[in-house]
Image (cartoon, rainbow, N blue to C red):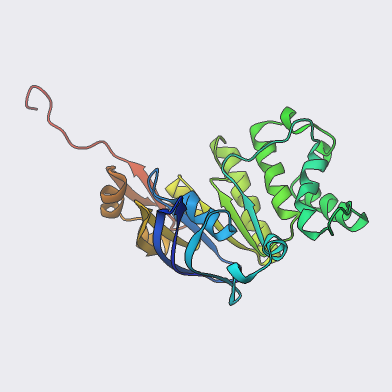
Length: 264
């Protein structure tokens, strides 16, 4: 599913938090939205999901999302917020079944097909053994996978993932992103995510969009966007940009050069 944004402005209470965003995300590709705190990354994802008012054009396969019925939009777009609401008392299976809601008629209950979809998703995410567990008893990594499972159960062509690695250690973060990338390759799903970790963004995303103060300031491949001068300007950080053995950029904090009190 191809996503295109043309001069998108979005925000709350008539006050834009992000403005002038134009970008195309081809079907099956991964765009990572990066930028300092308060740059408007989450607002941009919410505008694509139709959760905050926006101006400009947001299209999916050429169809403007504002012209889509809410149910059709929910079938096309899967959204995982940075801090998802975890309902009290729900099992993993019951929670993942919520992802089937856009496919149900009004007041209808889940049927065999919905249960089959959920069973398949739980197996793909290695959650089958936890299907009967309460969400609140899961570890952080297990809970993040459950959130991803709920989104995947929608069978949407576009996944919006807002900081999917929040609260995860490097191993669990890497495992989750590997899983998203594998599912993207298998299903041809388009992914748009926000990521604080610039090195992880460079390793998994095809293209990056850098926002600062709600405005797009750079877009392109990880090599084009993750430059030390751009990071210094927009993150107010001193870094070095190195390279992995596979050629991916690695952003490393570097202490500014200072003089000691003794003038050494």
